[in-house]
Image (cartoon, rainbow, N blue to C red; front, side, top):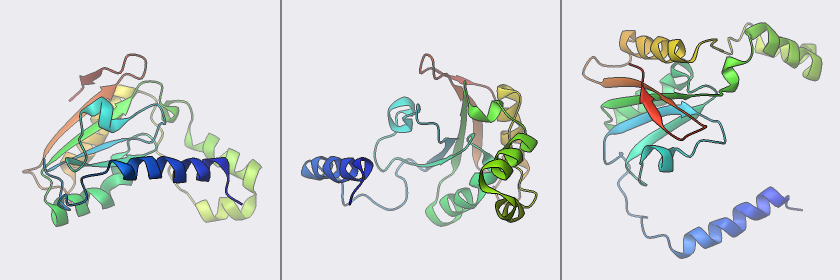
Length: 169
């Protein structure tokens, strides 16, 4: 039996399909850039960042984290020709609210020893300061041998309260 979420997926997709006309877009993003941003449900990257279907790759993860995104960044750049990165973190991010020890303790409490063992020493990569988190991730990308020097990299903050973006670096 389908859940309400699954039913919504099917019905929404039927509506989307009825007016879909962009099935022949090229695989590489037309504007040759990628966005690394947070998975936060309050962010609609296409609307907030002006991305039309086919324009850019959007890589989402907890905190808009560059290290977590590096696999996708390499594929985007090396196989699909992107040459610019917009790294966008946001106000009110959950990654600002905890430390690694807190996340490991929650896993221990809720999932037990086997889950803790599977995690090993996983770094959840929380950050206590938003702007510094942006600067650190941009510095990581600029220093990485996996990102060519020719790639333009910038760091931004999206304000969930106002929907405005502002440059950091």
